[in-house]
Amino acid sequence: MSSSVRVRFAPSPTGFLHVGGARTALFNWLFARHSRGTFLLRIEDTDKSRERDQAVQVIYNGLRWLGLNWDEGAGIGGEYGPYFQSERNATYEKYLNLLHAKGVVYEDQGSIRFRSSRQSVIVDDLVCGRIEFDRSADPDMTIRRPDGSWIFHFVNVVDDLEMKISHVIRGEDHLTNTAKHIELYQAFGAIPPSFAHIPLILNRDGSKMSKRDAGASVTSYIEQGYAPEAVRNYLCLLGWSPKDNREKIEIEKVIQLFDLTKINRRNAAFDLDKCYWLNGQYILQMSLRRFRELSEPFIQNSGITVSDEGYLLKVLEIVKEKIKLFKDVPDWIAYFFTEEFPFDPQAVEKTLNKPCAIERLSRLRDKYTGVEDWSAVGLEAALKQLAAEIGCKTGELVHPARVAVSGRSIGPSLYHMLEIMGKPRVLQRMDRALQEFA
Ligand code: GLU
Image (tube, rainbow, N blue to C red; front, top):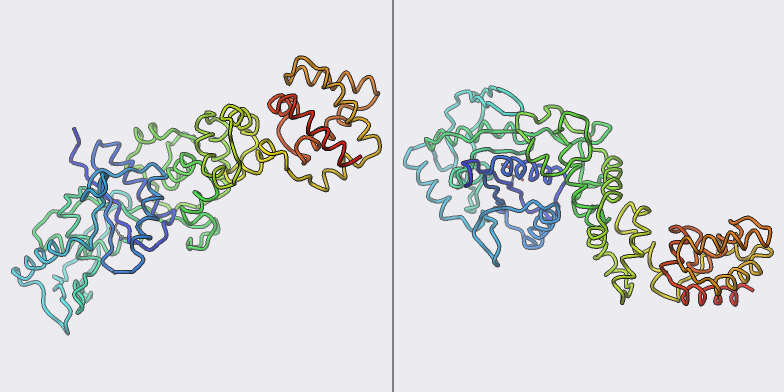
């Protein structure tokens, strides 16, 4: 059974989903889920643009990626919604006629204007508190342009009425518009919804976040390979907190605790470093299955050919703790999947080009030929035994071996890497390095 709580996210399709917008969507969604209500998506596309479809896609991608599913709408392609204002002209005409009948609109140079009562309006905001707006000097607002297109305030109010929206949760930049909106509700003889205006998101230096600031666009998190659950968690903390200093908090818990009256009144400071840190925490604690899933698009795009899923899973398991962003996965794993991997010249310079390195690598290769227990433990024991026999440091075998099998000087634990690659592959790679750098 759903409750009477009905909220909506009402973005204009600009081709860009700002983190501020995503946070607004998230807070609406959290409130709906907390109250077992309904969360709608309404695309406010009365300003026609030719790229609308693409711009709407950006909104869908962002919301879907964050897991903010919406409940209702016109029903397109086997999915719910959303509502498009551009398809709702008949409804707006109907409501305009209501205002005509009440004699509160008039025509002025082709535009339709709404006659303000000029009474002061009180907004009892769930976040910002009680605010009185003096409207005595405000001009009448236009609700329809001469070309027939609608002004935001009018269609926004009509839709919230028609869709029986119980709570309008939106950015604080709309607080001053609310006085106008309440006047329209009054003209329709309707009770306005409750309002919750959430504080803006500012940069750490207090400046307003612009489109160009790093982390401003939801698309950038998708492209960089953040875990959506981490970004969603971070957005939850922008203006809300569980009050016990917890940073990493499961979404089910947030849904349970979320309340509009607990939204912080102060502006939220955006901190991309914290989001990045939180993302790292999520990755560390993530199941291998989820890690595999989130790596997939990046592996796909990298051109790495995976023919053995079991091998891939083992590889991912040992690099997992090194990964901070999923876009880095291909770079960490590519050499596991090809014999044509390049050698980093600097890594070669510091290892294989050192005196005795080739001789030592060659002895390690012979030692490993005879190893029967091809496990990280067995391989470590064999290497240490050889180091003792030669009288060198283990590092003097470890570093050349790593470069020989991977082409680089950094990577996951050498012994685990060798175990996973398997004996034939490791010996073959050592032979190649011995030939190439002898
Ligand atoms: N289309 C408006 C915006 O994107 C919606 C404001 C509202 O939520 O009422 O800012």
